[in-house]
Length: 384
Image (cartoon, rainbow, N blue to C red):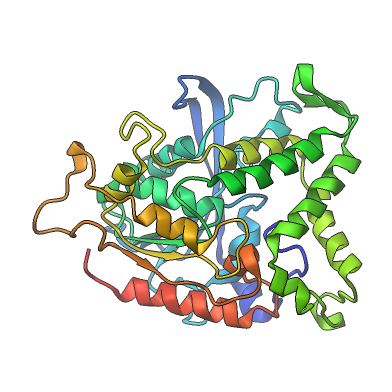
């Protein structure tokens, strides 16, 4: 997983049990119309279910995947018992692989981007709704949508488009719209990848595996994923039982290997989704971000990291300052949530930067504990 390439994460019997408890399934559509008007044929959405969905469907937690991640990479925080962030004792966790991640329908399955329709985050949110309604037959509101990084934006997008279909949102290290400074970072990753001689721009394809481009992109990711404090305090170092990272070069190489394990076409498809992410970029909100945020009725815990250089706490606070009333179709009545009070910001006190929101490394116990406690607190809230 690219979210943290420095370690493979905790491997103990409880985690292994969590991994084995999921059920991988495929939601298939003959045709899917995108926001752009383009049609995708033969779409497969791969998802994994942990736990048992109750008769009412009221215990479902939907967890979309983030950049560079598949459902297998997210099993470490799902399991039966309070030690897990997403406890399946009374909940059912549905992990949906977003389009382009190499598991659900992706350009790697076509071998090129030439015929790829470039679905957006909005399109993935629509698929999230169709998955729970048409495939899982859940007609009521979800207990929670949980997302990290790009998936945090997907969670907010779902809440804005379908405010009556989710009661809680946990958004970690993400924003409602990709900030400009984040877009510069994403463009640098793309340019590094496409600078490889294997990139054929005219035909939107890599003619061979772009090893040099993937390595360059991975090195950029290493520079932005962690914070300056993380590097200054050499928190990347670890013993043999935690990955055996002995030097800065070891750590960067491990992060690069994360990129080398991906298909370059899929990387570009996901970079596009992240670069263009904006929950108001649709006919319902017409680029009015404050209106889109104001339409969210779910109790929302927004959790940026104090040291994140990709998505800062200030980015989140500036977006919240824009909140206005929602659209006419989902207008909030007087007996519902007052404007803006559905949001709480809980800053992750970590030096791990953007990686703080995906604490699978054994040395991220404090990050994992903080997130788990806040998510459990959110799940105990019954305002909505």
